[in-house]
Amino acid sequence: MKRYTCLSIIYLFILISFSCQKELRPIDERWQFISGKRELAVSGISPTTDKDKYLVVHDNKKKDQLRVGLIDLGADSLYIGLEWPTETLPIDLEALSGIPGLENEYIAMGSWGFCYWIKLDLQSKTIDLIKEFRIPDSGPPLNFESLLILGESDNLYVAWAHRGSDHEESILYWGSISLFNEDIVISVKDSVFINIPWPLTAKRHMSDMDMDNNNILWTSATSDPGDEGPYKSAIYKIGLFEIVKENINFSILQSFPKQYVFEKNKVEALTFNDNKIVFATDDENLGAAINISVDGY
View 1: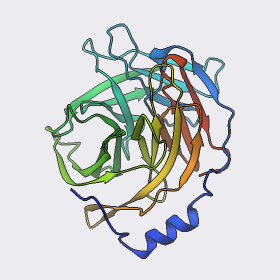
View 2: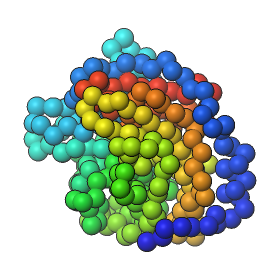
View 3: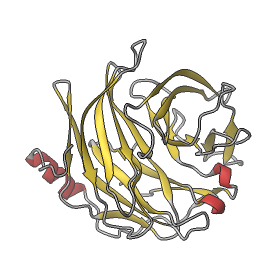
View 4: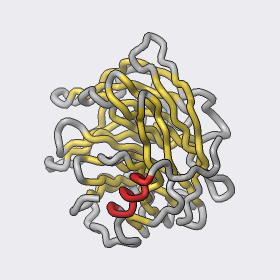
């Protein structure tokens, strides 16, 4: 496991330097309120083929609670819950990633590494469960909240992360995934410790992550002191994924300047949609909200 990694190439330094926003950059504070219900708090989000619609997952554990939902920014009713397609329900879904090359198909992951390949039908507002698998060596004491499928449809890779705490760093893992084989196999290539500087207390270094169009990996770091807050979040760029000759590599940044700061919300879900970055919250008893950058990222 790597603890420190140098910038792999000059390109990474130039790309980060010129695309990096000013620290504590002003953000759009016009949150759209999703719900005040704790069970609708958002723990993962991903775009659909409709630019106004986003699939979301919830970290619910009880039988009568929703696991997935659809946010429609163009509708009068912002949120609709979707029925899980099987009687056996997933527990504690914490992450959601689209599958490159497949429209409206996703991998949802629970905190113990159980994964669900699902397909969304936007017209009928239903989902189908295609296959289940599990992240290797998952389960307590590791607690996974971030997942990313990257690459091309015939050559896919996967990254996932243990969230960390005040007393331990996050761990970012990456490797290859044979998603289209009868038995899905994940081969871990490497991992690196991630230590985010802020928030300072009740810290989760990696509450979610996604990759922008330049292959830069972003993460949401949060402070989660309990069901009533108060919450804080900061959004960071942390490094670069590169795929060269069917090998995946990650280069970590030497420092993590803040890109966005949220002083009252726990941003447990983030994603990119074209040149916009989308944030959604799991504010526990305070509910959930969504926010979209107004001038790119």
